[in-house]
Image (cartoon, rainbow, N blue to C red):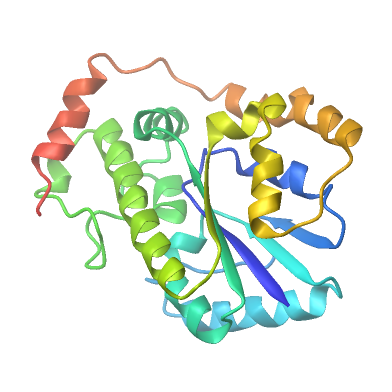
Length: 240
């Protein structure tokens, strides 16, 4: 069975993409699990990947399974290439500032809040790609911005790795995805070799306002002032 993963951060349109891909004939779709895959820092990390692979093979008889989850980049994506070579990638992107604002508004602060520790990478981990000095001195928003840059670095790394292995890697921005009239989703299907979807069904789902509800959460806070200064604080601490 062919597997397709999303290499992305949270807050990049994963729920929206999942709703569109459910229209594709012959494609099994899961959004944020099950199957659950653990971050590489979890002692049960590799066993969670083995369990996830077994689940995907027993869950459906369809030829392809797509797991739309921001956990993929945090869970040793090179493992999938080694243990299941028929794995392709959708790189879903969004400007780092927009991702950081969305995470900050929801109190998902990397290494600092409960939600941040559960769902984000930590700047204190040894296995980071965008290393920075003294992360404990950063503001909450700066840590969210760091995390967005860390994910961007991992996206570049995985793109190179999977392409060099001859796998399909297609990059798509959130802005392109929601511009439903412009054909970006159809191009994604074409590059991945997936069947076309019925236009009328696609139009209805793509326009559905329920996909935007999570972006209008009542938890949202007002934006911090001078966020550019907080972002600069991150980039100036970058250890190259």
